[in-house]
Length: 183
Image (cartoon, rainbow, N blue to C red; front, side):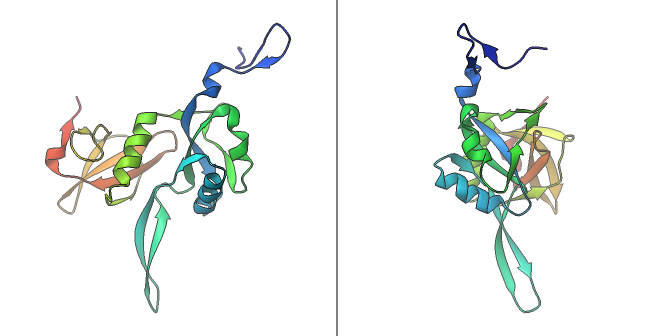
């Protein structure tokens, strides 16, 4: 089995070139620690993304509007793997999400479209993870280029974006004319 690390001529350990590239990774956090983790990541000057949505909760004596993480238990960070230790040392972080002990990068374009689309005040909310259904691509609007599943709810069209790596989905209301089917 080949190792990701290699010894050079001076018997020093060299890292693969891909470890110096900045990529987006999902960070798995302890329960309800996403905002604290994101604040600490920001304090360490690491680019990060914590998408939130607004939810109104009703208690006995009042209603409260809360900002909750769109992907519970996850914060997205953009970093080079060789610098991952500065993030992994933050209290509340469990690990970088990956396979066989190796962190897996998320598609840069997907995260960038999600970031720009959600920053334009689209109403998004968590949705059950979907992998099957009518596959479509957004052709207009802030999420242009994203692929997902089209579902209908209360006579409205909803576009469900699924991130396979973390097994989470988010739903956004769209117009019928903004999507095309993928064959």
